[in-house]
Every structure is written in C-alpha cells, then in structure tokens.
Length: 498
Image (cartoon, rainbow, N blue to C red; front, side, top):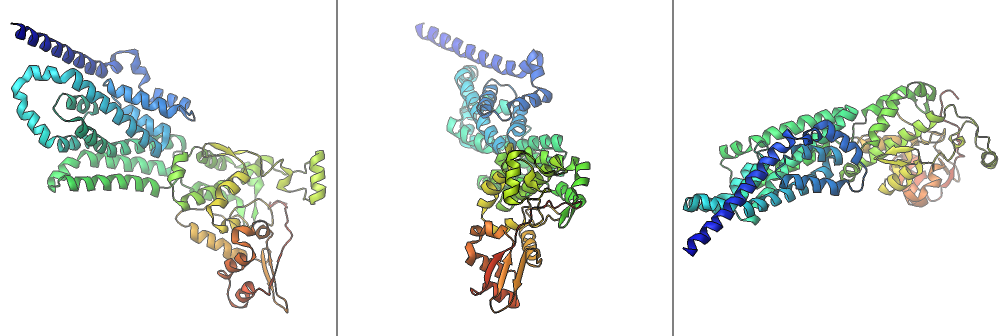
C-alpha cells in the first residue's frame, strides 16, 4: 500500500511538472500576442531599440541575455535574430546570434527535461521504449535534419527534444551545427535590410536576394539530401559549403560600393585640378557617400581583405579631404596672430589648405563609426598596411600633391590602379625628372622626401622606380652616381578656379 501511495505521489509530481511545462510553452506562444508586450516585438520597435543600443559597450551582453532568456521561456526568437543582424552587422551579428540561440536552446532543453520527461514517462510507460531506442540510434541525424529547415519551429524542437530520451551532449552538438547556416542567412538578411533602408545601396539589394535564395535552399535541403542519398559525412561537407558560400559572398560584395564616389569625382575632378565651386554647389552625393562610410560596421572592416580595406581607406581619405575643403571654400587667408606667424615662417600661399585650422590633425570626418582626422587615416591606418604606392593615391588638395583621378579605388582593380598612378607620376616632370649629365640628377616630389622611409630610404626609392622606368632613365635611377633631389612643394589649392 505504501509503495502504491509513493508511486501516486511521484506520478502526481510528474504530472504537475508536465502541466507547468505546458503552461510555460503556451505562455511563450501567446504572451507576445495577447499582452501589451506585443507592441514591443514589432520591427518598428526593434528598430528604435537598435538606434538606442548602437554604440553601447553593454549592447552585446544585453542582447545575448535577452535572446537566451526569451528562448528559454519559449518566446519566438526570429525577430531577435533579425535584430542581432541589424544591430551588430553580419559578422558580429552571426557570432552573437549563434551564442544566444545556443544558450537559449540548451536552457529550453534542460527545462523540458526537468519538467516534462517524468510526466511523459508516466503517461506512456513502456510505449516509449521503441521511441527511446530510435532516438538513441538516430537522434543526432534526425535533429540535425530538422534544425536545417528554417521553417521548423525552433522552440518546438528545443522543448520537444527535452522530453525525449535524447542525450544532452548529442542535442547540444546537433543544435550547434544545425542552426548555424540558418543563423548566417537570417543575420545577413537583416543586415542587408538595414543597409538597404539607410543607403538603398545596390549591394544591400544583392545581399537581400542572396539571403533569400539561401533560405529557400535550406528549406529544401532535407529533400535534396534524400534525393542524392547523402549520409552524415556528405551532410557535414554540404553544411561547410553552404556556410562558406554565405561568408564568401559577404566578403565578395565588399565593404561598400564605391561607384557613388566615382560619380562625384567624374563631375568635380579635371586632373590635376578640382572644381571646388561646382562641388560645393552640388555636394549632396559626397555627403551621402561619407554617411555610408560612417555607418560601416568595424567588424566588417576587420574581416575584409587587404585590398578591400586599402581601397576603402584611400577613398575615405580623399573624400574627407574634399569635404573639408568644400566646408571652408572659398579658402581665405587665416589672419589670426598664430596663423600669421606660421604663414610668414613657412611662406604658405593665401589659397592653401593650411589656412584651414589644424587641417590635418583636426578630427572632422566620421568613418566606420568614429570621428577621425586626415593624419589618423593616413598615418595610423593606411601607411601601416605597408604599400608605399599609397603616396601616389592620397590627395592633400595641393598643386604638388599627386592629383586626384576621376575614379574611386576598388578592391578588384586596386593593384592596377596604384600602378597606373605611379606610371603617371613618372611621366610627369612636375613630380619626376631625370637630368642626364656628367653627374645625373633625379628630382622627385617632396612627398618622397617626407616619406622616403616607407620605400626603404634612398636605395629603396631607386629600386622602386626602377620597376616603372626603362632605358637610360632606368639606368640613371638605379645608378648610385645619380644624385637625388626634391622639388619645392607648392601648397596652393588644386582649385580649377584659382
């Protein structure tokens, strides 16, 4: 009799726990629909929250806690996955979404295991034996296949797995692998939507289309695998291919599309001069381009290729300098006491960027979420990349500076573009001149005197220019008997209306 009473109490507790689990799942399903909480789960509300959290050092921690907690309470998390992509960008959004989703999924599994498994055993008894045996044998493959289909409810799998006999390590591994491709797709989709709403860029539209295509592919993945009779080794390889394809596509699309800057340059630049008056009268395109640069995610820059980063920062330097001149155009002589002393000592022209206070050291241009100066971009970012050809590409708005071109730098053509600039430099006697004689003289732009160390000093300069010259000029450049001198630097503004 005592044994029966004990079983009844045990069964009663198991049923009570199962009822609590059912109440938890149902409350999660309906909480956001039938309570005031619903108004905070719309995309408009999420967008406002994104605006408030962007830039906060606590944003990643708060996001992971919120996402994981919501998942553990059976609250649908798709909107949070999208929010992660919009808030943190593609790279960090994927990382944080994955961490949060895995934490939440495992918490939900453990909640279901603690509250629900006993009640299920009480209800079905020995009828669970076959299901438990099948779960032990095929649980990993079955859960992994279901996880790969984005349309299968995420929370249902979390709690449903917990009430089966599936071992927790097996569940955790299948979940970690299975949700990653979908997380990548949803995060990319949200990041692309945000970029599209902010800049309406062609890149964003491409990314939206690509993400949607991947989502459809993932939905049909189980049928595709069945059609080709692919087992787990093949499945793992396919997962790697899908994930790598998403990451490669993100990288291939680059940090941003620089064609807008090319349009600005085509209208304003007449090499070697710039029509600053026309640019000032029609500056919207330049401002929009710099606004897009300001919104770029630092994480996207960190994972970009060397050529993407160098092209991006060269364009940033030139665009920021153009806007700084336009902001102060027409340039007028700075008549402050200290400025007059500087002008007298350095013999700087009245029409010079030096009339702009602290023109190179002043923090004035926001790029990749941070306000920067020309010196910071050049000396702390561009020069450390180690390519001396940047000194033929960064324009300081002076007559003696290597001129702007009518095109922006792009990752795909950067090497050819930089080589073209060096060849143009060598062919222009204002920057490069060889005088043959008993003692030949190579006269170079003063820029190469200031930054000669980036080329390896005098021997490095000789070797560098030997690659861009031929014949007697080539021999003179390489010869140690050829003296190297430097032109005086003309700081007059490179203005077509000067």
